Length: 272
Image (tube, rainbow, N blue to C red):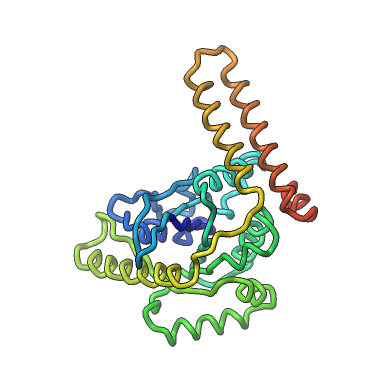
């Protein structure tokens, strides 16, 4: 049985770097790490299965929830559906990635994620991951930072308290532009970060998030992908219109399934 790990976060916070680190794909940059404040993740991507502590894992990197300013509600719904389709078996844990201080933008992105997927039950299956933390190997420094986070504001206290812990990593670049000595040191940091996160997952994250409408969304998106391929390969003169209609139909289906899980307030939030 594979354990699916979904990674989300704001652009530029190390989401794709963490995905590469955990799946051990840093060398070929499978998840498209970028240094700019522009998302490199345009579609959901997933790794091959890999073992850790006699368990099997798969990493899924979705579009950042802070990347949604310039895309429509329909596109957001489709991305959520595609993320669910990437993990037919369900999600075992969500890693919510943030770099630096946990600011208002992170709280807004976290609450958007929680609102889109379901009620607060998802937070019990969510681990906060602070990236770019140079002292990540020092338990005392990590604990001091956790306590400092809890002093910021009540909203952050509630977010942290609702989640399955906060862990610290550092995934610095090992690209060709990095000098050999630095690349070697950075690679060791990534290896240590990988161990910290995967050990946490092995110990704490073996249950599947009980999202009742998961299979319905999976089937809707699976049918959409098959029909989209047929239309794309056809010579129909109305191909563009057919694709747009198909997209509207699947996003309406996704929204309907989500509506069965989401409170009315969250649905209204999605319309904003």
